[in-house]
Length: 369
Image 1 (cartoon, one colour):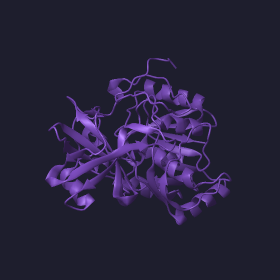
Image 2 (tube, one colour):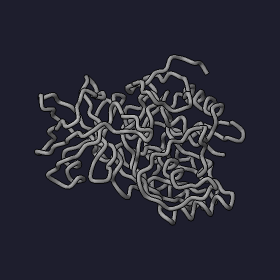
Image 3 (cartoon, helix red, strand yellow):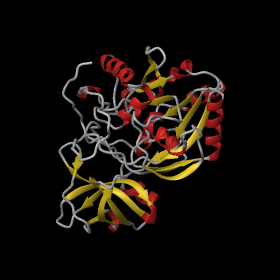
Image 4 (spheres, helix red, strand yellow):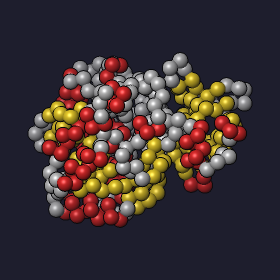
């Protein structure tokens, strides 16, 4: 793979503490950034492309997502994240009348939030770090957001862009966001799309700031076909925060819930030697939070600060369905923990050569043991 200059459509910022793994060095061509849902390109959800790679043989197959069942077998377990995507972007006005955009990230105990303030640019927004503790911002319909302190990562380091904040809303959260908010999007998405474009078909509870997008391509027909083949579907919940792609920025706490029924199913499949395939990196993070050093998965609920690196390894699953991730994305450290650097270099070289599309409206990669 050519070690080209690192390139990203999202903002980059150097932080004092980064992940211990150097992530994949490649350049992402702008034309490979999916700027609209596949439905707007004349495709159905399940007609996005699917790259299937085998860890055992390092082989790569190119197909369409609706053919995913051809690569799975009876006894396989898919673990899905049933979190729905909030209209988490709100217009905000600073005391000096500067128009900004507030991105809600994670709902914390004591009814606090982690949030990000962003400034408007010509086509999108960028992180706005010129804020101070105690600042209050006006939101639509008389609502307010007050910043209290910078968010601190698990190592105690303060974030340069995330803040702990409280909201004063005239309505309960979900009705307020439905009326006044919009889905978060970045500059590669050229226009706004409705909330329905950011939901999987199996949502059970709203709460993610950004879409857990690995499951977007599933349709009722695909799911029914998988179940008919004897493939098990196990749900859990992890509410994703805002993207953390700024030059290996550390992941932050996110709320998760792994039910006892899913923990039992995962343990049974592991004991039987069957394949456990996470649908998305969010699923891996939730399961790793509740899987002990002996490989036993337990039910659990709370806020996880687990950071998955090649040095830590992965205990819970041996397969993954995921999107394609940008250079410097912390998700690539998780993929390397599962697949190894050499396999990722093979598959990302293939994805670039075959012109796969990146990001939440893009194509998918199924990694099998």
